[in-house]
Length: 397
Image (cartoon, rainbow, N blue to C red):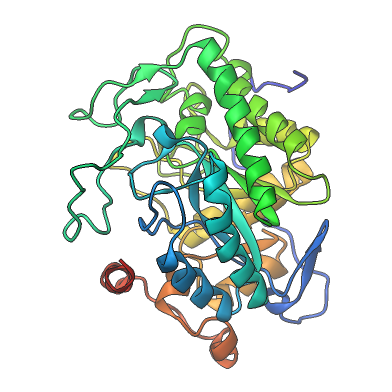
């Protein structure tokens, strides 16, 4: 591996990361078409993977048609279908979607075709939840009782035997043989997603899912060549990226979702040498770029339950900016960015290439097509998001 490893943390923040000013005409970049490889998005708005907990044996259902059809009709350029497990035991719940067998291709294809028919580009996130599997869906736990014949996976495995929470079952540490078999499952799922007509594939290594466990020294205490140094902790996620890139058509974009920091400190540019920080993320993304990853979606990566985030929209845009300019790769800014004014500023300042909004899109169901005049003025409050999202899912279950 050719990565130049970090031996010390910077003593001060590099102000060049935050000084890029647009030289383009002052037009609305947010709503302009943009092309990446074989796909052209109508705009730079991306709806990220948000689980609906409506699948049956991993297969998408009519609830997904309603959900994603509605989102597509409102005009997001790219819609990334929810976290889709590469194997049954990679789901967080029995209601998660999956793409590990042939029977799941046709239900996915129905949703993909509907998204395309509405003018949006369909993407999908491949994921493995690792030690997070078999939890109760937090959005529907008050309304859903698992069936007696529920096929929820019971066996957990992860980078090591650290528990998700103190009350959770002990996960099994993946053996080297199991790691190699797991890599192939990612590639196999990519092939199935391509058969379903998906245009953009995203690998999930964020939010304390399996690949995140390997990347972060806060979650990985292995003593073999998959743990310890940054080179070792990057090894498994890079093996997955290579396998998926080889299986996924060259002309189709491949994205990678990862945390830029574990937020061991609320300062997003703080150093966490033995855990996961922005400086290690830069080195990792350099390796991803060599493999052929086309864009990085910056996501949350906290490994503790009580972390105090900085302002989400500002924080994620800053981190996306760092990765974009230090690595030379396209990035998407995630978090709570949903006011059009903020989104446009991020794009005009070249801090990111795509604006990834989730709760804001669900809250403002007319966003963006039917509310363009207000797009650059409205500030969308997320304080109501819990109740409104809950109501939406109550109708679709």
